[in-house]
Image 1: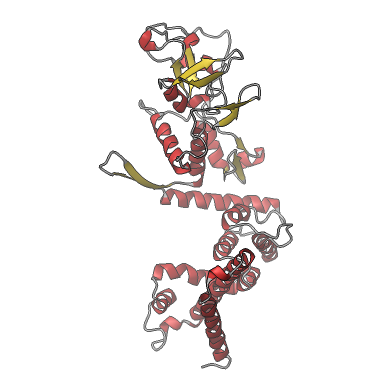
Image 2: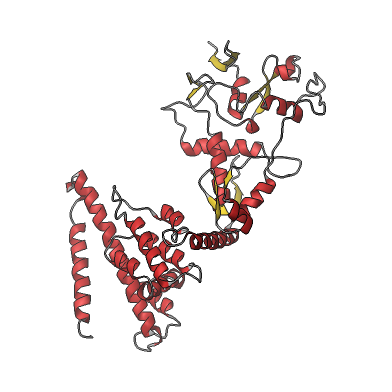
Length: 432
């Protein structure tokens, strides 16, 4: 064994014995504060162990241990040798070998914080991945400063709370890691990262559906961040109405038809119902440009030269090119008074309200007409509220009321009575 080598091995053996001793003690002996402290210690220990493992893999790569007929076992590469030694797979070790090399040769600030247990493995991957995509014109000094700032955000150093960003938030910040040194450089960096992520997401996108044979379907999917955010926003709106809301005057109102506290309806179940409602509203006669309005914030310069990024109202950032594409597909319908006449009162000639009638109703209602409901008008169905069509009700504006899927079903539920109050609000009352 090389000089000093036994000290490393002995120190690791002592560490394992210490962990084993801690594991023999019952967690029930810990107080709440001690339990939190113990979990933090374990997280730090895991980081230190992972950092050391990556450092060892980098050293093995530098020495080409895999090519050693005695110690390498005739392995084809370091990741294969590492996988055989650890009883793992080559694919799972390949990224680790590369990360270990980068930490050993380029990113000293990240390496030291990781070895001290102040960074987690997923944070380290975010930092190194972002730094590796730095623009070619970035100097080594600029890169070092940006890395140091990003490590500080990850560890929480210098913040009031002392809490750092998790990997998800850090990934957003990493796109602008050059802001402190050069905003123009940050624009180039963000553009490069978003473009690469977008291309990678296209490759990883999939949808798998399966008929369970019992009246239900199951599925899994993976979509780009942009589309996941848009879907989450729509489902978030469709999981309303909330039980407690406010009417147009600002007065509190309780929707007794909504799922209340204590009822056995979980959030995933609510989202499942919203998903079904979304599917029911998909077009059946072809897919034209999107009719949803998308609020996008982008600098004019970025929109013109294609650098930088745009920010959606959900907080997701996309490339300027994606913003232009969304702008081309977004639908906008203007309401012009005194323009070409369109028939708004079709009486009994039609069962469903026309597009022109929906547009006219949208001038009065921007959401579901039931008090407290905030589902957007675009997702509402027009309910024959004064007199049902089946009973002779006319398909005209006076008999039309925009109702979201949930409240439209309640309107046809004999257990509920939909009434218009003197202030113009519509509310449900339980029939006794």
